[in-house]
Image (cartoon, rainbow over all chains, first blue to last red; front, side, top):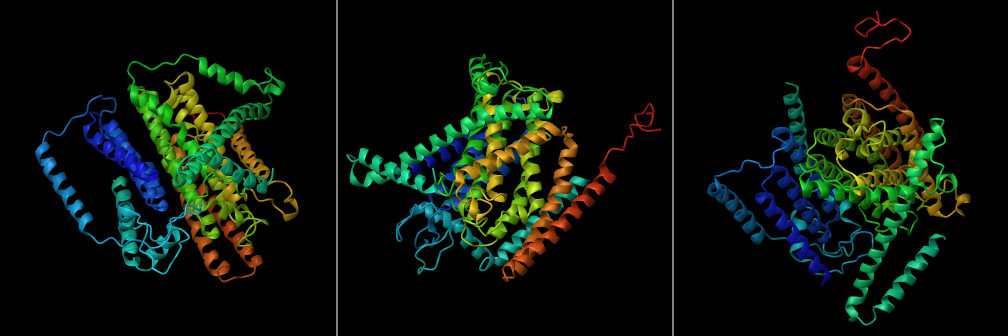
Length: 196
Length: 414
């Protein structure tokens, strides 16, 4: 009961904030709504038992990416302006965004989400009994890599961090290393461009 | 008031709450009790930390007064102990002004939201083995994640005020906080690597005589002294204390992002500053000074919360001591210091710690060998630090001015 209510509240906050990003008249205020939306998504991860992912969401998206967005807004526009210019090509924008949303929704609906077995718990003793249907939110967390499907024999897991690390360093090693290289290249590229 | 007493009281409280709620349906009792316990824990934290904040303002004024050979506040109550309360009454009764040009919502929300990032971190701080609100498996990460959100209310305050000094202050604050977050977090990755956990209590347990018998059995400050110093430097930048109070450098930009705030809204920024200072000292005590662990087993009769409080106050005093001693850095020096000195140093420390941890500790070498290896690695780091500073001064530093020589009109020595 409580969990369902909390889920609905958090999901509502996330969606309303996301709508407000588009509706707000000032770019700076839009960016602030986006921050609230990020916080809501972190809340959804935590509700799904993906504590590590929830915390990292706050650390990366709220603490870093939104700051980057705010900085970009402040450095590239007339910061003190009350109103920001709007994109008038609403139909094209709607088509692009709508088709992207459609593809994601279909992919999310048709994909096979392996559910974790056993308890996904933090160390604070809020145990989730094995076999509990964690529902769509757990599937979301699995999709995002927070809870790689465990072997069915495992009754309990110490936490998701060690599991995530092990899975990154074993079955997803190639993807992990490739991503590291891409990030490094981007970093070096940014420095090279900034020096010119 | 020992640890066992805390556990006893908590279970007693749970029982009496369940008794009070016995008219609820069977399945609803346990979750409601847990919810009420969470509310109680949150209230206790807010009240205790609030009192701690009030008296750290008193302590800071007294301590800095002593450093500067003054007496400090001494009028209300014994040793001026009533001054914080008088200050609170003053700040609550001052006129609340909203500038006409300000963006009303963003301006007011900025003052409200500045406190939670500083306060939320206390949820994972263990004052004793069982005196912790939420012992999350990702506790340390949680602390730094919520602390990193503090830049958003600062941005809101700076932008919402519609004041150029506020905006410049906010830009400086954000640049500084984002830059120093990197050495701050990197400096403690070495500790986390050795402890092998992100949980607060597990981390403390590995650091002393009352622990789980795991490695290292001593405070991490002895294995990672350079990392500890980097952590202290980066943290005082993170919480914007002198010598890193460039965002509200009063001689340059009035008061930075909180220039336009008055009354209790200004009080909120003040509150957040001291909350953040106490939180940073507490997490430093947990990561490097062993939290509630005594240094030796025979000192275990002193309860854990006393150790934790003592260590936290000690680190708070270090931050105040820095404020009383050092002049403020220049904005460009600040950035260069983070990126050219602290970040390379923490990366080398991470590499060396990883090597020692893997090659010596994981291979179960005798403790003496491990400690010797850490001594060597820290000596290497110290050498690197001195070399980096010399290189930086040579490359970017201002030309040295000798004060005994007469100054030429250009300001340089003749």
